Figure 1 (cartoon, rainbow, N blue to C red):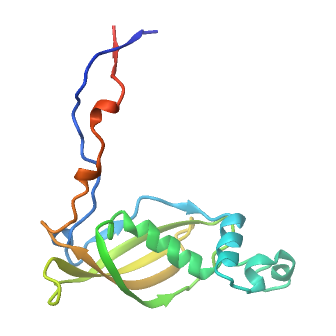
Figure 2 (cartoon, rainbow, N blue to C red; figure 1 turned 180 degrees about the horizontal axis):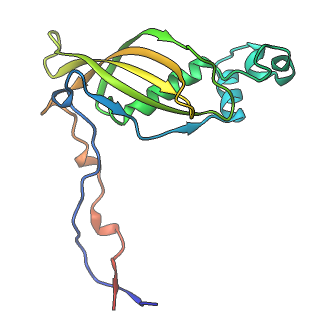
Length: 187
């Protein structure tokens, strides 16, 4: 096995991570398959349902759910709306100024605890903001689907996103890299 030693390097290359899209990066017709999936647990469903004071028994009472058509608790649909919106953030709205609304929200199929949810979005429209020149508007259609490719959530969402040259700069809030340890180098 190779030995590792510390080297006295005090500097290194700063590699930029993914910083999200700006308004100019969106093109009508583009489709994004968002990279993260999430398996919905009983805890997710119970916590979200109780946290939002939703008293629907079909989400939190397994005995009640056993007596329904599905025989299983249904996952709270507003949790799925939040989850699918969250999954799309990495591709669509990391640089959002504000969400303007969700339209045509539909839940064509139920979600059950244990289902894994994925999502995709298609850019429907873009336009520069007339009232806020540093921003642009983007409208997307987003679908959430389960491990069997069944669509479980769909909606259209419009959001305002920063334009090139107008994104707030956070580099001033970073600590100096000198506090990071020296690199390990093979002998």
